[in-house]
Length: 549
Image (cartoon, rainbow, N blue to C red; front, side, top):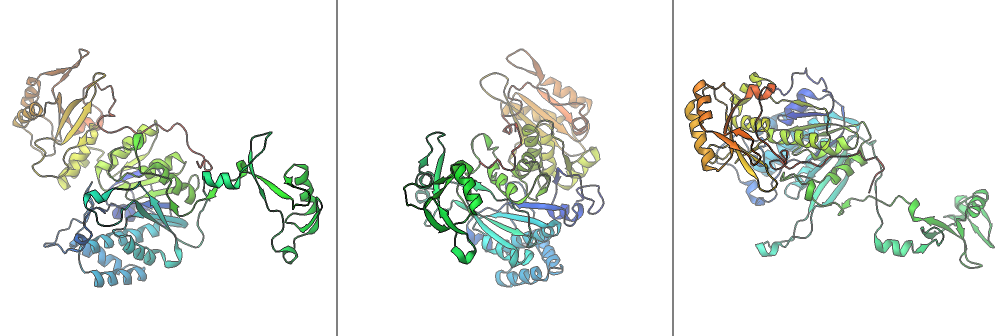
């Protein structure tokens, strides 16, 4: 699929969302050395039995692509094709590495996963600027193999840090029969493209015990905490430190006599007792804090009002930390597996430009809503989603499930039951709305992507609405409805809300009308859609670069 109409590597305007395979988007729409920072959190189900990943499939399937909430890879035609692309790439280290891994591991699910990752990492390396950085977020299931892949693509010398992120507190897995240590940490690999990269030191606050020990003095006049620090020059005369007398004590000092006199006049030099070596008064409120280390245990998983219900959602604070450390205002941040959009949300909040890519309409639709809720009036481009009826027909022909998910997004419905064949019972989407202060009501959505729709489908849908005890049904169709279909919909009657307003029980909406805005679903909702998809909190102001705590 060609996700945009742009010419090869004609870089889009920044702040762009793409629906499509990130490998295609990177190759077709992103210029060399155009991105300052890449963060990727590729879906991978670490809760699966590790050994299953090495079980060779019984038959070949070309479904190495990721679908929403199903992060499974299989060795098949697509994996073989991508393997060949890596072997033929200009990066000979990556070519040798991927062949060695295949000889060692064979053709199985894990090898398909690593092949997929290696091919995309080669493209991410290409689009990174020489001063750019990449953060890869993973878990212990494949982190050791991904480190080898990263070393081959970026070069061993460009590995910077392995960050350990404690995403949660202790798990009491013993009750579930887990016979090993509880896993509460993820791994984030930090690589740069070259030996010179963008970097901003970040700091965390001091712990209580450290403050009580090191900053135990309090200035009575101001209430400011301080410590008394060493003034003597390290290395003495050998390091060129000046020798003179201060308050009756002769030493090699770290400051010149003129500077020392200034500090004394400012009250910054303290002699606790006559004859003691004078010391420097260092105030706590003048200190930046503790330079950030690679063990991050102060950011918990997304929860509370921040959590939108997406299963792999990462907390905003985590992405803000990474973006603040490895980019500057106006830089371009890319997330090729953007999921529910935490990276692009954080980038927008911090004044960066951003590009997000995901292979499901479910994710792209969720991100669109999230950004519009958090940043009212925001403008950004969306590529690869249908813009007209021809594009809608093309999507329906290629992938009926993606078409259904996309069509559900047009009416702000959540997809129902994923790809479980026969499990939908005539339902493709759900909307929960609130038309009184207490209690929620349900709307069911049926999506028809075929060229032939009939009055029988509307009649069947009426039974679905009754069975599900829904108040309203939205019949979303690619084809225009017939007069008998419209008549059948009218026969279903109306839903009247507690305030006396009436709405058609069955509403037939065409894709064309939804795209052009000619029609929209009719119902009253006091929650304004926040029941169906949890609403992201509005960002009142953008954080400054130095707003660290």
